[in-house]
Amino acid sequence: MTSLYWKSFASACLCVTLSHPAWSAGGIEIPGYAPATGVERSYRVQKATETDMSFWFDKPGASAMTMRGAFRQRMTVLSRDEDGMRVRWSLSADLPEGMAGLADSYQMNLLYRNSLTAYGTASLELETDLNGNPRDLSGVDQIVAHMRAIAASGPGGVPAAPQSGVYDIIAKLEANPLQIVAALVPEAQLLATGQSYQAETMEIGQASATSRDEDYDGVSVPVTSTWTLKSTDATARTATLSLSEEADAAAFSQSQQPAIANLMSGFAERAKNLTADQLASVKRASKNRSVELVVSLNDGSTLEASEIVTVEAGGTRLRTYTHIEREDMPASLPLPAVLTAKDLQTPDLHIDPLPSAKAGPGILDELSTPPAPPKASQTVTSDNDGPKAIAPVSLEVKSAKVVSALTSFGSELDIMLTPESAAKFQDFTQAAVGEITQVLINDKVVIEPRILTPIPGGHIVINGEQDPKLLKVMAEQLALPGAKIVVRLRP
Image (cartoon, rainbow, N blue to C red; front, side, top):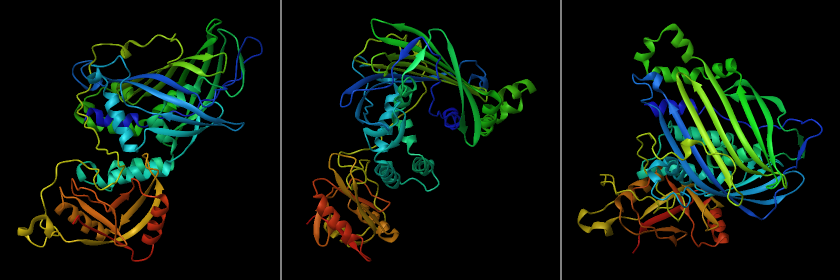
């Protein structure tokens, strides 16, 4: 229960793009961001979250938990013009070298691996502004289609319920695709924090404040940001900047009241016994952010960043740590102790990997869970004849279109069956578990998948080494009224 309510609370805390202040004349000039194009940069990323809900338990500190992760992500600026840049991020959930044997204490890596599987991609291509702030994402339709296919098939062949949170997530991604960037590569935003599209002049030790508003579920929260140039290194050609941010306490508290009420409902008995002062404290909320950035005086790029964000609300505290360093440059910022600690109190999580297959999402033989027992409604003509008695099934197509594949196969044909045919297809695959089958379009066999588990949802994807022109022809044929496909056992 603890993690469920905390997840609801934490999901309301979203960051927005930062703006840079105007600096006074004189001092140190930090150049505008001018990265080399076509050069891949590797970044070592370490993260941790500390969750403390000891207020709601009898023993202080008993519920304080830490999760952490360590990653190696790669970024390439593909092109750059006067309007912005095109950037590719190559993503991996693997622990970097030198951390073998510590996987049990890096639960974020396991969760991130599932995120990459759920989104169906290990790379993102972004359109950014000249600071490097993401402003658009390529391939959103394919990512959303993949997630819908995952939801329709479901891990273990059990489709997600229409009212489940999965579809809420998909709807939010469709409304704001940049949430995909925030989920898979938040490093892009943090690096952009230290980069400016034009040269800025700063004086060591002089602070400069800016302000902006952030939206939290319809509540506008003023945020004050204070920038300071801490030091420069003439030999390394770097400058170290600090950023301190504070959200307006009253507005932020107002924005968090629904989440706080939800949290309190989970501890109803404890909440009944709170004193007036304790109740007032529980209903207060605060958020602050502290960032240190090492910026190149050669091209204005962020070489290293260390960020700590603290959110307190509802008698709980969530603190996140992020440290990023470019691997071809020496590190200079100290690592928070939580990122290197050998002993951590971690949540008792059992993280099962989501099923995936090289053939791509939605393919008939993707799912790999144990076969379910047969149902009475199987398409079987005789128990004595075994698999050979499973009759071919003609299925009516609701829609068919060629989309870009999320794998190396290039393109794929995305087929959705009508509801009635989806039920027939599920019955057929349930009867054919363990057997090699065929899918026919216009009496021609296009794929021969082995059925590993019943497949609900009526979603079929045809890819592999199919000619893209042939896929287009098949899509046009299946788009005609009354179009059908046939599924059968391989003779």
